[in-house]
Length: 341
Image 1 (cartoon, one colour):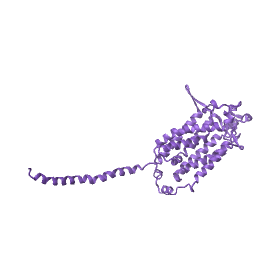
Image 2: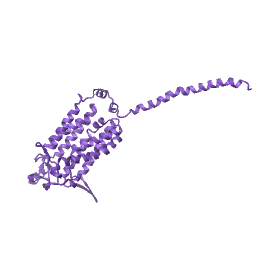
Image 3: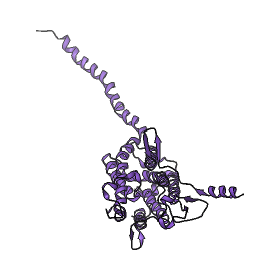
Image 4: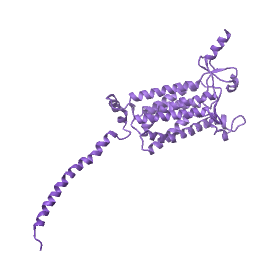
């Protein structure tokens, strides 16, 4: 009886993985980095599909991603190092040092807000150089970013980090003693904030994908929806976390960042009035595909007709050639009948 109760208790918690790296022969792959990479690949795949469905060339999105993803990783690391500098990288006696600790990305420590900012800026720059509609590009990326974040959050699970307050809920996360706060060393289970944020992001992905198929917003406004949604989700998830973090006026810096993101997102969404594209929605209800509404590329079906126009114009010229030759022949006949000197 005691054994069955114990087994039931073990099933009522989420266990943490017993390893942080995947060993394949002589190679070792950190699970944190693999989760980040898988998230990036999933985001690119979704971005290519959405851009193709909207009438764009998916290869353009691959080019943008080759620049935006590395920029996002750099921005995420910079945000983490700057916001946690005094606690982890100030080279004080009880902290790490910025050199070389700031470059140990595989040990964790990526600030998503910094990654979004720098990755988005670089993506816009590259997209504009390619001649893309950068606002529609942001709308295309709106569900791709939270998808990457949801998958990447699994890396925190493998690292046993960024969990929340102690809890005995059925879905509590079990943390090993070596990864618990000293003051809570006897408490085994905590809120799985990595899971909360991942599920919130997946819900945001579904909302934007389904919504963008049924409602046409003005260019760039779906990205504003993502910014607002991410800020709202991060706000309540951040309030559950107990790991050390820089504070401003008694609040964690990421809470301030979330509030700022929500404010800027709302300002962007309603800038200039209603975010709805009235004409676009009328065309969508009439059955017109988004590829025609957005017109990201010239309509390929119209190209054969455009190419046929020169041929149609050339036909009268071809018909006129025999008549012109006949006239020249008639003019030449009298000259041939005249005697030579």
